[in-house]
Length: 324
Ligand SMILES: CC(C)(COP(=O)(O)OP(=O)(O)OC[C@H]1O[C@@H](n2cnc3c(N)ncnc32)[C@H](O)[C@@H]1OP(=O)(O)O)[C@@H](O)C(=O)NCCC(=O)NCCS
Image (tube, rainbow, N blue to C red; front, top):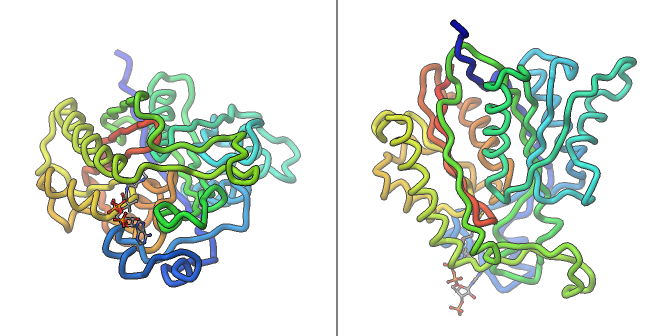
């Protein structure tokens, strides 16, 4: 009888840029206030990177490898989740592969590719890694989620510039005889893809392209879709909300997530958030939450973790994970 293959996370790392941009800093640039931003979003500060995605992504991946006690050569694949790639091609993942093996006499040529699913990208990358591992074709994947949203943020638009920050996170996902990842639920409604977008070749803003968003509509969709996907995945995997030990949700707006907690009847103490410190960092958001929850002792062996995300597309997704 062939043994069932599962996947699990055996290491993680993050790159957090040093430079802090506070609400008061922003209030000097646009007509806003610390009070408005905190009450309407829950964000107090965010980070601004002076590095590109390959550099900060490679730092996060090196830290994740170290925490898993592995070397770059142990990776069979690198998947990079990003929405802010500096070039249309080559893939950021290819550059990360080269950076983490700089100076190696015999570098390994594992597959390396990018995926782009808005703020849902990190969870989608975990899902792809899990599928490859379960299929039996590979054993170990480095998932990197990296974004530098401040580079596509319009700092004269107060409705978006208060929301975003830069960050990278990485996880090492490997084959396991028990889950790990129990289930995923993914979805997209392409009819409303215009709600969050960024044109590549736009000359609207003096040749520079900025993120555009219909905040109110995204707000409502985010609650609706994250609630639906959370309910779907639990039904699919035959669990109930009372089984959940830790609830992680995309960090976009604290009011969105508080609304979700109420609708799903999840107690506040099961929810981990770092939105206050980092704002919305897009693809790394979920991975950074998991990493910090573990570091802060809020994720224990045997815990069941429900994660939900939403992003441009409009895309959404959920995962159910058992901490080993
Ligand atoms: C963007 C967002 C914070 C705006 O909050 P909101 O409560 O919906 O605010 P509204 O857009 O209704 O605007 C209310 C008022 O605040 C004003 N406002 C918007 N941004 C402001 C700011 N930074 N400071 C002060 N006032 C602001 C608006 O101009 C509007 O003024 P008006 O009534 O005079 O026209 C909120 O819609 C949001 O978080 N949306 C989802 C974002 C998201 O999740 N994106 C990523 C998903 S992956």
